[in-house]
Image (spheres, rainbow, N blue to C red):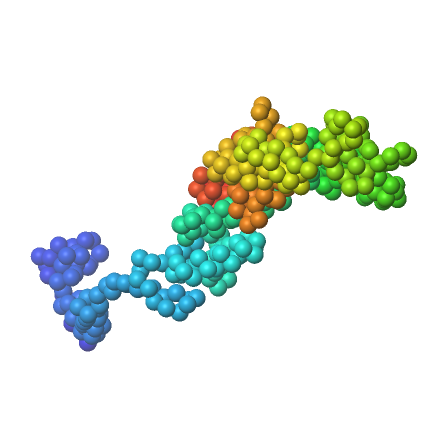
Amino acid sequence: MEPTVRESPNMPNNGVGKPKSTDRWLSVGYAQKLIYFFIQHFNVYVSTLQSIAHRTRDKRIQVIKEFYCSICTDTYPIDRWVSCGCDHRFCADCMTGHLTIKINESQLEGVACPGYRCSRPAPHHLVKKLDPDTTMYERYVTLSLKTWIRDAPDVDYCPKCDQIVQGVDGSATCNTCMLTFCPKCKRSYHGSVDCEQAERDRDENVLSENTIKRTTKPCPGCKAPVEKISGCDHMICHKCKNQYCWLCLVIMEKNRTRDNRIQVIKEFYCSICTDTYPIDRWVSCGCDHRFCADCMTGHLTTKINESQLEGVACPGYRCSRPAPHHLVKKLDPDNTMYEGYVTLSLKTWIRDAPDVDYCPRCDQIVQGVVGRATCNTFEQ
């Protein structure tokens, strides 16, 4: 039973017959309630303080010095891990092997984090860091550029010389070979006719094309089809004015000998190394200059390594005929020089394009729209 507090005649009154708040806390009834409440929750307070003291005394921060690679299932020092910018970490050897396989298989979507259900793309600086000789990195850049050009709606390769061409109003004109073609079907430009109708029209002309192939032979100089109607086997091409034999298709010398016989040219002169070679060993950029394969390969390799795209052309005097892609590929069996040439061509084209550039953060190709460019990798 709680004690009754009687009001003293000298105690100040608030007008309702109760003591003030300061005097109420000093009353016996409120003091008993406070003591009862403290005793009831004393065990909770003690256990809480003990747990805090125990955790502060025993729990210390553990410094991680190693990490676990989930591919090779080994542990390595913490300073040897690599990542694509996500939470997955792998050793450098496993990441290099994974990226090399995907790049060699031309799987651009697979050049990403090998973590489970993670598709974070590998940034360019990571591929370059893991490739000291830059072979894998150059293939990765070439693959990225080719994939971007393949998916771009108005950019494609020229079907004749493999140069990059940007289409305008349903047609594209190559500045190198001056070929005008349709960007959709990669065939000759067919005007307002759709691609399916143009394909049917081409099928109707197959018979005449087969007839031309059956009755003509290509000129050994300019490869133009020539038909022999009558006369001897001494042929003169009206396009390049070369004289050749109809039977063996060997170019003849224009000047006749004293006994009025045509002398067959079996050798040619290379103006770079000043040597003579068999006639079947000459190479050309499509102009009148002819060189040996070794000199042409050395010339093109030097210009490509120096990143001089304008110099990847005929080395003839005052001749700037660009070297076609099939010639560079023919002179490069292991495709090292050819891939460098393709990469240089693509980078030069992107550099000169008004609305295409590289992302300054991840080196991905970005196409700008109305003065603004957004990278799809980082959404910058």
